[in-house]
Length: 465
Image (tube, rainbow, N blue to C red; front, side):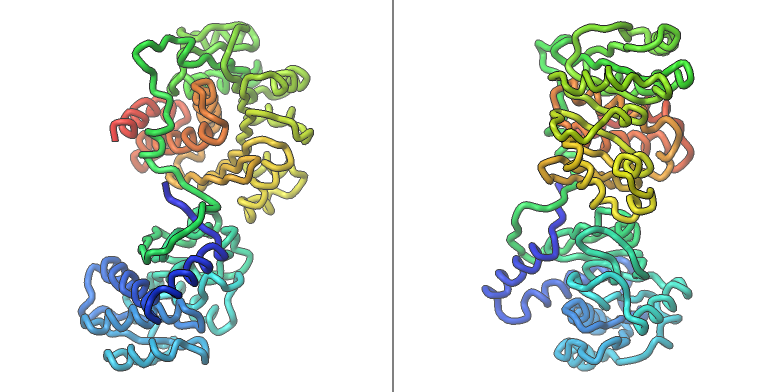
């Protein structure tokens, strides 16, 4: 599991470690890891032209000492000082190693620019001189390696309310930061390389499941399992207006770990569902979980859905089913899967505000509605009512296609029926959904049904380790 900590948590852990180490040791650990990462990024060191953008914080010191390592290995290192309070010992060491102080005129000829402008304690945005330098880098297309986080982003929220660095690689220290996982800032980080510097950290604010976590959580059937013990999902989806949603959601559910799907809906839609999936049982019956909402349109029965929300079986609400959710605050075992527009409607805010502050609004909705929220997007944010947050980061952009959310709803419903909590069902479902999309896509267009078809194979690959 990858974990992201807040600035306050990181600062406290750093202070504790620095109190037990010789002065400067922590910065040297970070600088060494940064220099290695830059060399690997470039594919060489000798003769490489490296420009360091240096601010006043410790990130500037990290960048300067990394420049020392690179200069000693034959790189041509130039420091552009964007503050009169640059780390003096680091600057002196760089000059001694053969580096030099230059200006933004050196940027166009650089092979890489190192962003050491603002540390994790900085506020969003850049000062005018720093912004001018960054804009020049972007104009000439020189790749940027960010130190810890791209300067100008909000580290603790992933928000980008002001101009900021767009990195080709981010090298971070000790632990991931929240902005590495949450969009829109996550998109500005590029790949993130973590350097271990020995921090002793508390429980994380945000986490990301890895394949080993999926294997540990996935409800694999035992030798004595039958179709009922594996879980039965009740599916209320589709309508005479949108019958395909029921077919697609059923495909997602059947690709999960459950033993049976009961479809509850219009007879005409049931015929289409059973035509595509003859193993489905049509009609009411005992279930272990409900998946409700995909494609219901005007046929949504709010009273019926609210009745099921008050029952003991866990429920996933998707699409039109979200309209039945109220803020009574007494829901148990409910997973809601809105996209940004749907969450904006639920909260009574503009969609642009949700997209700009995804973590904030997912947490707000989880608390207000007392449900687990799976906010769909390039990075999926999953917020539980108890404050736990998980993020899924492995999705391909090709997954943004009609019906993909129906597949996810069916799959998460199957995981709920298999006994997972809403938080775990959402986390495992989002990861497998994205893995299947990547497998089906092969870097090209996909359809929702092709994602559902790829789900068993993607799951097998992950379970096999």
